[in-house]
Length: 437
Image 1: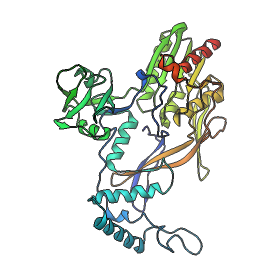
Image 2 (image 1 turned 30 degrees about the vertical axis):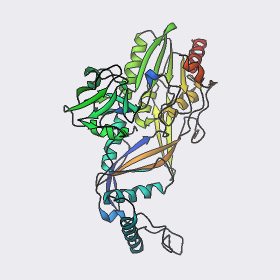
Image 3 (image 1 turned 90 degrees about the vertical axis):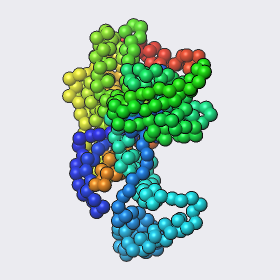
Image 4 (image 1 turned 180 degrees about the vertical axis):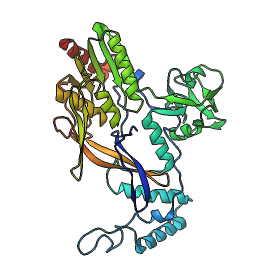
C-alpha cells in the first residue's frame, strides 16, 4: 500500500452509498527481500498514517449481513439462487453468539471490535487475500500510504532488542534528520510513555499527529551515558521511492521501490538527470517492488515504451479497459530491468511490457505472479472495501497471475556474495547492459 485511478464510478448498494472506486495494484504481502541493498531498503516508517489505530463504530443494521451460511435453508431458494444473507434467523444467531462471547470469553471485548470483526469476516469468506474491509482509520492509513505522503517525522523503524523498536533509517531533509535522530537509536519513550513491549504499529500511532505539532522521543543511543530527549516536529513527509546513481561507462541505475503517487515525479526527475548526465544505458531495478498504483506505473511506462498497449484489464463480465502509450518518449538507449520473486503487480506490468516490446532485457529471477487488480469502494460511513475486480494482461495478451514473468537472463541471488558487499544480480545486469551498449 499504492492505489488511485480516475476511471472509477459512483454507485449505491443496499448498505449505503459508496463512491471513489479506485483501481489498485496491490503488493503480494511481502515488501522485503534479504538481497536488497541496505541503503535502499525501506521498512515500516515512523510516518503518520502508515499504521493507524484500528477502531471505529459502525451502524448495527449492516452488521447482520454477514453470516448466512450457518443456518440450514438460508443459502438459497429452490432454484439454487442465493438470497440475501440478512434474515431474522441470522440476526438471532448473531445475538446468541454475542451473548455467549460476553458470558464465557475470558476477556472483555469491545462491541466495536466485534462489529468490525463481522465485516472483516464477510470479506475473509471470499478466500481472497487481496479483498479486505477497512475501518475509517485503516482507510485513511491506506490512502496516505498509497499517496506516498505522510504526516510524521521521517524515520523508519524495525524491531530491536529488549522489547524496544529501533530506528532503521532516517530520510534526508526531514525533521528526524534535523533533530539529530540516528540509525540504530532505540525508542525508549514517546511523550514520556514507556514503549517497552509495544509493537511498531503502536509506537507509530503515538508518534503520529497533526502537522507542525511536536513529539518528544526519549532515545537510547549506543555509547551515550544516559537516555536522550529529542523534540521532533511532525511535518508532511514525501516517502522516497526512487533512487538514482550513475555508474562507470555512463550506465545509469534507477531503483523503484514501489509505485506510489509520488513515484511518477521522482522517476521523471531521476530519468531526466540520467539523460543530463550523458546516460548511454539504463538499469531499472524492480527487485522486491511489491507494486502500487496502476495509474503510476502507466505514467512511468509512457516515459520509455513505444506506441501501443501498456496493459489491459478484463472483469468477469468480459468488459475490457485498455491503457496505452503514444510512443513519443520511447527510450533510445539500451535497457535492462532487474526482477526477482518479490517483484509483483505493477512491477510486473512494467517488466511485462518491456519484455513484450523487446526494448530491453530482464535479468534476475521470475517475478511473483500477481495478475489481478483491486478496486477500493468507499462506503458512506467512512469505511471501505477493497475487492479484486479484474485480471490484467501484458501487451501480448499474457495473464501472468500465479505464473510470473521469466527473465531473459536468469541470475539467482547469491547471499554469500552479498554478505561480502557484492550484488551479483546487479553485476550481471551491468554485464548484460555493457553487451547491449
